[in-house]
Image 1 (cartoon, rainbow over the protein chains, first blue to last red):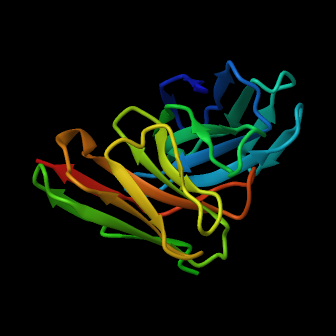
Image 2 (image 1 turned 30 degrees about the horizontal axis):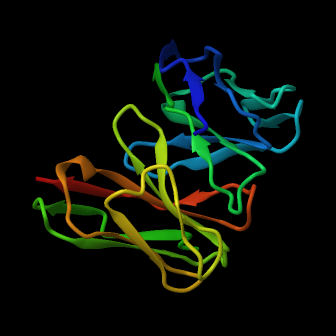
Length: 113
Length: 112
């Protein structure tokens, strides 16, 4: 089946630093999604990308849909303590009859004040 | 708006017991999903329902069954629980294909 490689697995950064994480796949995806999961909660969508090459921002977050359709990255600028959590990438292919996603294993972010 | 509601939030089962996890969404979404999340891993799809009246296996369906009761509700059943099914289970829904999913808060299941 499809697999996503998400890196890094974890990050420990100082408040104010920028963060970058990425996902790569052996398969082509038509949609890339980035989610954040807070402790004890379900994942919440941060950014959705629908077109190869697309660069989208949401506040301090920026994500890009790779031109090959096999990768995506997420950047967080000027991190703050509430950025702590697990970040997941997810890809969706066109060959599906539902919007089911393949998820990466997550990047756990720790922000030190 | 409640969004996606899962019950129960916590459950402890003995090996061999059965139970049903309930999920309901109030967003009039067509598609619904059940995922499990294990430590250090992403979410793995157990079953999904593209629309009312249809269900399909996902990546890890063994040991589970599902029912799409109506457009709002999608339940997950463990017929004979095993310790390997100890996990956090998430229900999600999406409007259509290739749209983002909205997740419930999860059910933390322990099988002893």
